[in-house]
Image 1: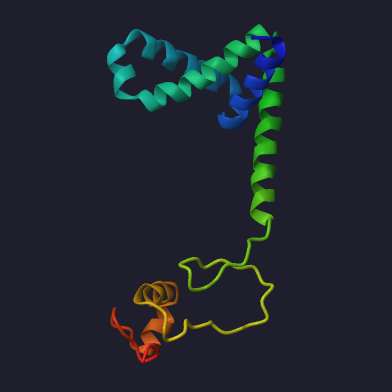
Image 2 (image 1 turned 90 degrees about the vertical axis):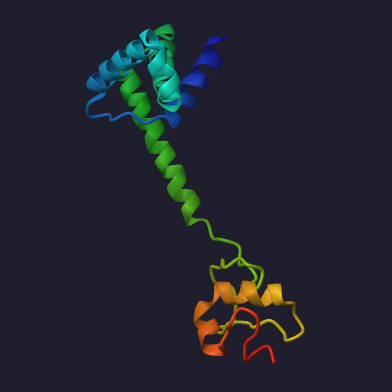
Length: 156
């Protein structure tokens, strides 16, 4: 594995795993102790595979940092910037406008762009499954229309 690949792997693992930057030294010690305990005891390893995977990820981070000659302070700062970038990306993704969906396709998304302020009912000729989806999305309308699971006043 080249130095560039190791750095890429380190960045990926730091982006994926979270460690509290305030108690970095304590976290590192605890993770290494738990990892050593898991390695010694096969019973623990088989019982808690998901914990072992997570802890192994942290240990891999520390080993890659050692190979790349990154000290703990630099690693902590790098980890903080990765985590900050991850949170920033998540916030930016949440801000993106959602595509406005059709209200009778069992999807209720929107973000404006429509000039209607009323719910668009399916036409009377539509199948029962369309009406079920519609009333599932709009329970208030189901109540008003007397929906009993098979028919309503609007369908007649």
